[in-house]
Length: 405
Image (tube, rainbow, N blue to C red; front, side):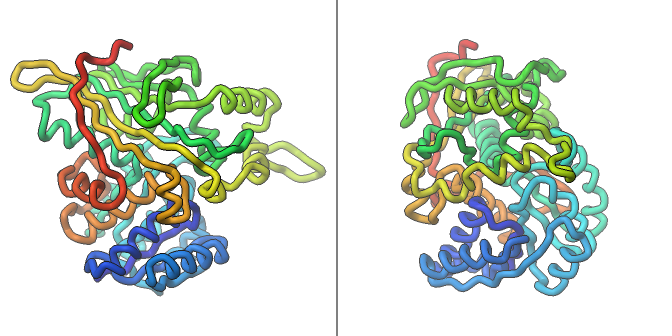
C-alpha cells in the first residue's frame, strides 16, 4: 500500500481524497495512508472529518505553505509519501515540483503552471523539468483532471480503437448546473476569471490562431442539459495534444457560459476588478482580482445549492480504413449525485475523480516513466475502465457528419 501526500484543501482535493478513501475502505491495495496538507489547516480538518464520516477512513492533516520550497521539502521528508498530488493553485506547481526533485518523490497535478503576475499558462515551464526528473529517476504526471486530463484520454482512446488518423478535434465543456447565485465561479475565481478573459487560441494547420476573448460563439445541444451557447477559448490540453498527436490538423476548445455570467464579467472588467496588477488602496497595494475572489462565494460552498448536470467530451473527425467518420465521447455528471457522494458539486467532482485515477495509474504501475509526462503519452484503456467504475461513466456515439462550424 502507498502513502499519498495531497496538497490543497478545496473542492477538487475534497473529492479526490474522498475517492481515495473509498478505495481504502473497500480493501483496494493501491492506496494506503493519506496525508492532506494546506495553508489553512481547518479546511484540511473539515475534509478529514467528512471522509471519516462517509468512509470510516482516518486521514492525517498538516499545515503547509506550498510556495515555501524548504518547508515543502521538509514536509515530504517527514511524511515520506510515494506520490505528491498537487491540488493547490497552478501558481504553486513549480515550487512543489522543486520539493519533489529535492526529495526524489513522484508528482501529479491537474492544471499547468501559470505565474501570478501574468495571465498566461503553458506547459513550457513544467516540460523544462523533464531532464531533471528523469535524472532523479522520478515521474511527474501533468494535467490529471478532466480538461485537461480525461479529454486527452478520450482522444487517445479514440485513436487507439477507432481511427487510423484524427484530423480535427473539438473539446466541448458544458456546465449546465444552476447554483442560484447572481455571479459565482465553479472553481477558484481568480484562476477562472484569468482563464476566461484571456484571448482565444486554437491550433490549425500547424500554427496558433488567436483572437479576442469570448467573441466566437456557437450553439450546441448538450445531452441532459439542452441547447447552450459555447465560446471558443484557449485551454492547455491544446498545447499538449498538438505536441504529442501532431497529425491533428485542428484542435479547438469550447466552453459554455450563460448571458448573466458574461454580463457580470463584462462589468467587472470595465470597472477594473479583473486586473492582476497592483493598485494602491488606503496606503497599501492590493490586486483587484484577488480582492474580488475574497468577496465572491467560495466554490466549495456551492455544492448544496447546485442543481443540474455537466456534459464534457470530445468530438473527433478522422479516417479508419480509408473511410471518414466522426465520433463523440462524453461524460455526463450530476451535481446532485456528486454532492450526495462527496459533499461537493459536479465541477469539483469531474476534476477530483481523475486526479484519484491518475494517482492509481502511477501507484499501480500501469503508467510508468522517468521524467515529465502528459496524459496522452500513456495507454488510455485502464484509465477509461476506472472512469466507468468510479463515478464518471462515458459513452461513445457516431455522428452523422462532422461539426458544421
